[in-house]
Image 1 (cartoon, helix red, strand yellow):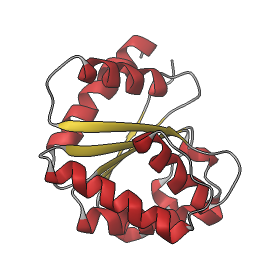
Image 2 (tube, one colour):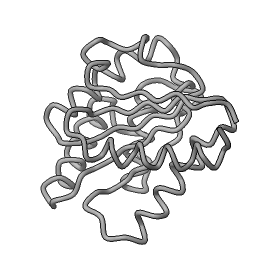
Image 3 (cartoon, one colour):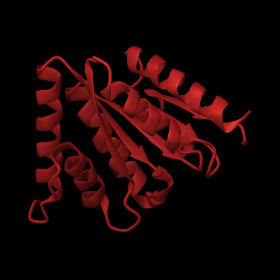
Length: 170
């Protein structure tokens, strides 16, 4: 499958995921250079030029740092600011509040974490459990791209609410 085919397939998959209320998490896995990031960026660009009922927040997984930095990357993408003074719990609560405000204004928040393979294995479980809790209180969708399969490494409660797509090599 060509890179162009992968990009088209991913964009179609994202649209299906957004309209499906059964799933809260989408994992797009494939080799480096297979078109994951390009598809996400094209999808975001297309949505900015159309009248849609959702807000897309793009963030790149932090290569270093702890769970706080992961939540801070989402918050920074949403607000455009970085606050080193807030605790991890304060950041999570603020993130939930902002996401709920988006929902209250009639829009669906979609949070993208690109290159999720950079999340250390020890951090994935607590982060995914926290994001699952957010999906239980706020209607939000999370999209992750990764060069490695993530679902087997996730809590089963998250895996049940997840879709996963493996890209064919370019």
